Structure formats: structure tokens, C-alpha cells
Image (cartoon, rainbow, N blue to C red; front, side, top):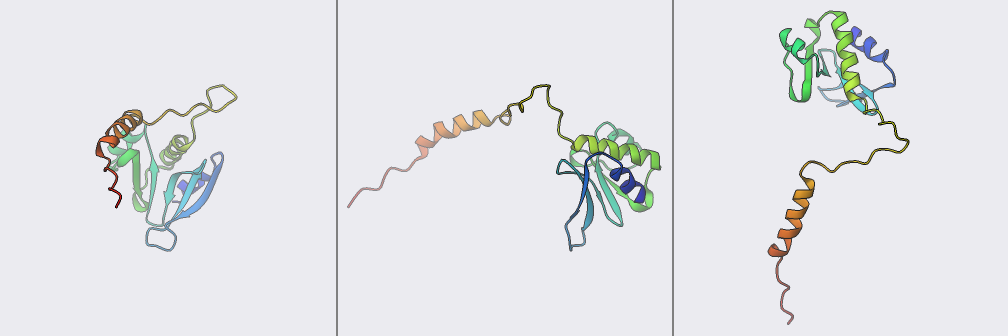
Length: 135
């Protein structure tokens, strides 16, 4: 696990924290831009992969939801592979670079949110209760 921690600390703008403090799941967390990219405990580590997910599968590792890979402490890949994977996980957690403009880019609404808003406002009048009669 030392190789993972050393690789994580060597990257730019990394901070550390503790996840699930005081529980059986407690682990050291490595973050970039307030987003975790590596979790390390005494028994295992987790990091996120995209381009290297196929390589992880070929090595017999399970690639879970959104590319998170669990590494057992007693069966870690070679140090060079770990270093590359930690760098990839770090890069995935970093915010996308600005598109060249001085101001921040406008955020797009979530996919389908405008449709949902239209549906909910159109249907809400139909489902409203009539006011109670006054005594």
C-alpha cells in the first residue's frame, strides 16, 4: 500500500482525509479538487479507472460501478502499473480545464430536466385539490 500512497502524494494538488472514521471501513482518502480518487485501508485500496479498466479486468480485478476498482493489499499489481493507475484516477477526479474564456462556462441543465419541469408544471394544475368550501 505504500507504493499507492507514495504515488498519490507525488501528484499535484493532492490533499488527504479519512473516510468512514471510527468504523470498520475507515480508510485514508486522497483527494484532488475536493474529489476522492484513491481510498487506502490496511486490507485494500480503491481507485477509479477508465482507459485502464480493461487491463484491470485482464489482471483478474473486478471493475465496479463507474470504473472503481478494488485492489487487495496481498495481490497488488507491479509498482509501475500502480503508479500509472493512481495517475489515471487522479486525472479523472480533476475538474475539466476551462475552455479558454476568462469567465466560467455556463452550466447545462441535466439531461431531461427541462422536459420533467414542463411535465410537472403542466400536470400539477390537473392534480390540484379544489379549495375547501368556506363555512
